[in-house]
Length: 264
Image (cartoon, rainbow, N blue to C red; front, side, top):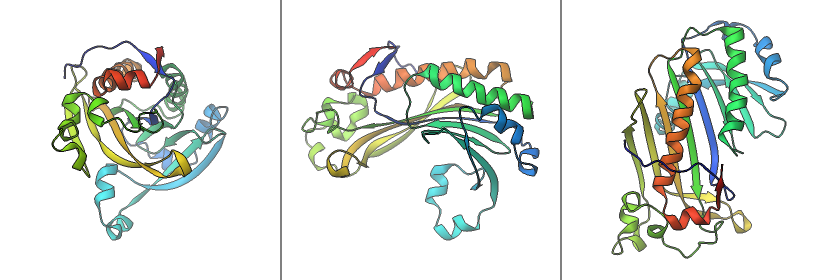
């Protein structure tokens, strides 16, 4: 993938709805056999609220959602622990084979990175995974024309022509009822790839919290090469930068301006 470099910016009208980082490691059964009290002590100043859950393991979310409910109920479950910030906007998930940090209030990479480092340092100190099997960073953006004062602007004016597809065709655009695309692209380094899912979605927001037709840009960047602990953030910094370039590639100059970018 050869996406042009773009300047780092922070958007005053931030379209991000969730950012997730997940790292996978060889199974550590001790995490299931005892409560992670020492790990909790390490991160409790930032994540004071804890709860225990049972989750379906080893099945990608998009595959799980496609399974019939009766099949979902029969799948084996594994123990997971969640630690949340006081306001509930940041969550750490710990299982025997992955740790994840997610937030619904993302501002800058440096803030996210600092909290993630605390969590990974605690993981290393308490459980010492020998290496990492997968490192992933996922950004989910919702473009709401209503929120940006662009209610009557066509999607063709807001998206890169190569992304808009049928929405950029004057003969088809007004009649498109559904459009959703999934593409897997190779990234230049670290044997990394990005799974891009994008298209029209209904999203609750705007006046009276009514549903609006918005545009979802969901980019899941990851590598499955074995990675040593000291190299994790080198890869994550790379994935973060690629994600920024990719989002900027998706959108037009008009949409970029409407998001009100400021230097990072």
